[in-house]
Image (cartoon, rainbow, N blue to C red; front, side, top):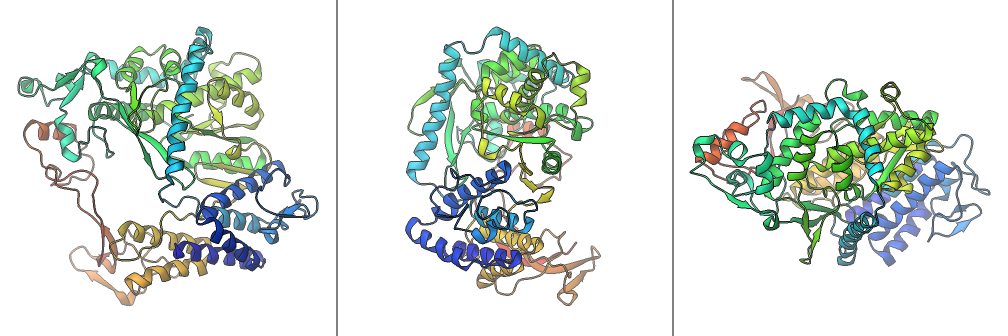
Length: 602
């Protein structure tokens, strides 16, 4: 962990130099806390300090209830006080009229640098994450049994969903009715442990799936193969549950996802494609939901930080709190084919790591291909219900269209006009969603959405490290991450820290090449360009070449033939570059390696 602490010391010292602050006492204090608390001080405590700082920017003062665990002097915490006094009044804690943008950027960089290091959580934190997943499910069940949502609530939701997304969802409905669903396999793991090309064997199918997506139409190349390839058809009570598992997120808590069975994931991918295609058709920048362009959310967040016109809302446990009953009886009420498709491709049970099986009230856990688009539709619809409630009258289509460009949902990142924030947050809570008030902003000049953080229109997004430094050439993922980190720091103006990162790489790889920003090779980027003395010319492609590092891998062996291979070829997206070994190798590479070779410099 020396590389991480050394990196933090370097960035803190350089932030001090940029902001005109001596940060040595802050470094000494942090290292003493590190000795007692371990790496959690940098990965959990400091990000919590950063969250309190963001909240202080939002409310316009440093509240005494914030920055717990840190000593105070006057109206500010002692830690990082040199930076804080350039932003807040040192006695009252009130935000200065013209706070230092450099100091704001520095505090956020210092606090969030190590927040997302992908290291395993403690067993206690993993156990707490699973328990929270279970608690949310039990909460949804209890609230449904108590009849908290009435038929009138679902009718109101259905009307609004139709008003906002009627054209798009009608098109999706027609595609499903016509059978224009093109399933495929995703790159992720599945609960039945099939990998690579072996997923195309589709050894099981469910009776529920067969009612809408017959195996004879979607699971074999054509009807001629029906007698040669009959899968095991599973009754509803025989269907395997999704497998709840943990993946790294932060040291504070892991991410809880669920691995779907192969047959479910296969059809979900087909639904994902038609949902995204129809919802992003036309002018995607003015659509209310986005799936591929985060820039719209970021631009609205920037404008919101300048004018206060837009609020950014973040939700906690967003995916796990979308009710299946709301999707079926509300969102899909007037779109029966979409409702049926989502119903038969939804897994109804989940198995926890300890073997317990839970009947799901949520629509889907993260891991389902339909989770992301459906939750975006639900959140956007609720946002308009809140706007309607705030206006005190029923919205019309003309009203909805006036909000194009000012309401946007990307996953659980929601941007709305600030004037409607209280009504919208009330509606979100009414439908069992939890607004993360620590990461939602509608007052002051700070906003964040989709990885874009702004104060008064200025970019204050911190650079984050996700891995420890590579210790040998075999650490391919760490190598790629630290090359990217060095370049990000360099272009952000943290030149000394960028060189510190480069020095960690030099210990393993020796002299590092300088590569153009446009190159896919790994190397250092520079404002002054590439040294032409280390390049050569490719006489065949007529391109300049440079000797640099590349991250290379090969998909694992996964040989298929016969009808499985034919099915894959029929479902293959031939618009993508074709790997001529795709029937021999497939799936996520199990190993990667770093190689230095001559590559194109453009």
